[in-house]
Image (cartoon, rainbow, N blue to C red):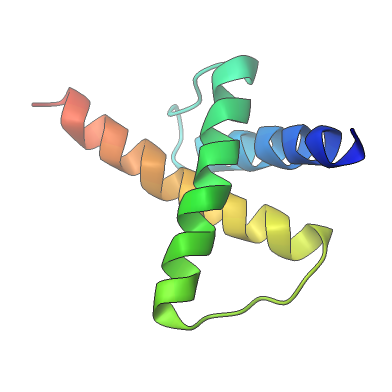
Amino acid sequence: MDGIFVSLVVGGLAGWLAGLILKGSGQGILMNIVVGIIGGVVGSWLFGLMGVSLGTGLVSAIITATVGAIILLFLVSRLNKR
């Protein structure tokens, strides 16, 4: 149960940070959590492909999820403009 709670908190924080960084790409608290959680998966996958390791812990999880969420929000904003 603790893992789910931590994932929600990290996802929400990452989605919120990504929305701030991309200015106006935030989708509300629920969508920010979803984007942040999916962003964590995307970020982990991309960092793994590149051979980048940020270590373990909460800070590295937030950074990884935020990078993934930024990528997701950027792609979604580009797809919506078409």
